[in-house]
Amino acid sequence: MLTDLWNLMKAYVPAKDKSIVAEKFVDICMDNGIEDDEIKELLGHDDELDEAIQYSLDVEDEDYHEDA
Image (cartoon, rainbow, N blue to C red; front, side, top):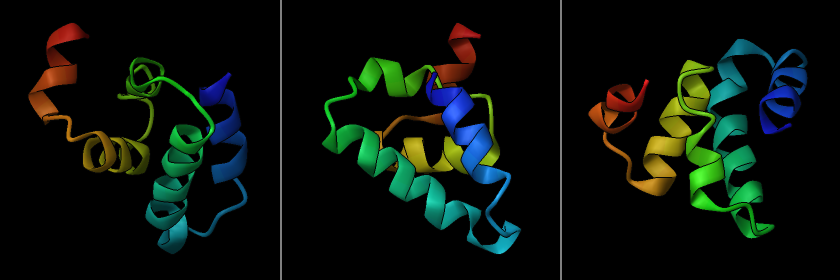
């Protein structure tokens, strides 16, 4: 569901603003009780979202590529 929501939102966001919106998206998820593991499941779907998740959850790049 979160992937679908992100994909819908990013379609309406200019490319230059996607990283900012991705950070806000992750913040909103965290503020509303979405578990870190659920947020980490979004890794690998979108570059801007990956960067926001890595920053917010302090996830190393290698951490999610090992599971894929």
